[in-house]
Length: 360
Length: 125
Image (cartoon, rainbow over all chains, first blue to last red; front, side, top):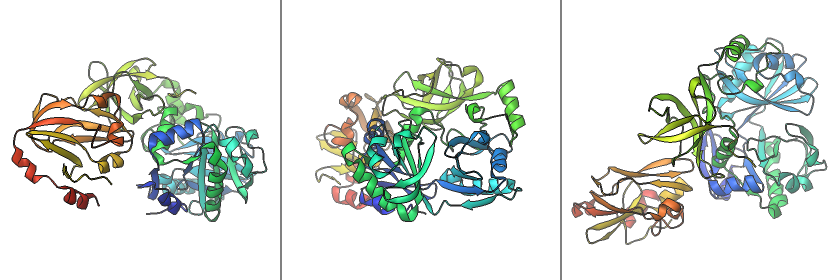
């Protein structure tokens, strides 16, 4: 099993460590609810260095990205990032990812840890354009510093104005005494903040200084458990749960990052789905009656017929009710439709709601 | 790890406190710390007579759900209604306010098969 460069920090902090995507990762420190609340109300730090990073360089880098990814990367200017996904040639999804435009002819692709090898092979197999590809995943670390106080708490660590970085923009600048750090106004929590990309050899210094600078703002380390509850409260998809090789971006509600202004893998089939409709859709639901939905629970109509399956579910730490997402037959996918979740052989009532679950 | 000497334990991480033919049952400090923040304890078997190792309820943490198994056979005569409003008592006081059910034992000889504190400590150590 692999470790991130910060593994000893996590153990020293008393983290509960679990295997995740081949890495020994901190799932929680103090407790998922407290960590969740820290990110919603103050600022928390996640070590997400298990994520993969590929650097694509060359005059055809954009053409390669346009071919493999659904979103229109031609709209990216230097210093901007974009959420996208890669269809798998069968209408499913290889992975979801973030694409950064670093230079005129250079892009950084950030992918899920569990998919690093699959993604690398997939993109490589489409690279008949002479694009130089570098897999930086084992050499780079990633910290997500998330929460409403992130800007204020981190400002003393850099010479640039953090409040001037708009959402899904980034700067390459000095941070915590290290030069050329990527400071990106991204993250998967819905509470704002930054993601910091640096070399493994630099991350320990950055981690320590981040905690020093954030001390008076109540900064705390946050584990993967709270990362999941935070992203689910926003309705953000998790690869392997809500999207995978068998789900289409259109079914998953990712039409907004699927741009038919250019050609890409599966463009025809996805366009037809967008125009003619799909047979199932990813929906978000809140429990009406008491119960907590979990991955793979059946979704029923009110007569008890199976109409779908839960892909993600949890007790919402912010709202204190059960929330979840899942695929249902399209006829049942309308807002406010009442459904039931089968929990321990009983149908427990829920209703389809609009995302995000959590509103500030 | 808190493992009181005066209780009996199961390999499923439940504790049993005996008074006459009534057993009070909960989950151990180790179990609550493994589960993390507990948000719901569902016990709908009050009044039922269940066999040893049958499921009498479930405990839900934010991230996981676990079945609760009968350490002993008997009738569930009471469940801890305080957990409805305060499931976190299982985290903060697993051997006190976090108790789950009281069972009228049908076969007290089953007690001999439970672990004592030293044996349970060896199991989770």
